[in-house]
Image (spheres, one colour):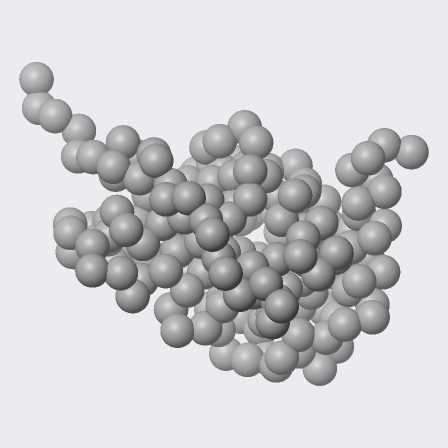
Length: 188
């Protein structure tokens, strides 16, 4: 069994044994057609581990704090799903160029107060970022939460994430690629 298979088994167990706020039960997993529809709307592929979570565990409702957001349809808490939230964030970023939303950075979990855990789908490692919109400037609102989705999930399972009561010191480095990824293309 691969390391990812072992992780998926542990996540499935964690999903069965915990229920984030606002989720009465674990939603059924999505099918491959739903993943294909989401990727078509987004215009980019989702990281393989994220796809496996939605296909094998459930359509959100598990993970740290409020849990993963559903892929296409909103959860019982009324929070938007991943794809509509990403599209809304990109649209908002185009309207307010001082607060752009980076292309390919998918919000996967809401922390409350406008904060999101996001996966960088343009990074082969799928870096997990924390978006904290209460900063004074947009480039101060992005932090590297985990180098990849697997590490982020392990922190949840092990109880070592920054969001745990005993671990509230975030100690995250700013995301160095924010300005590069949000710079407007220059006219030739």
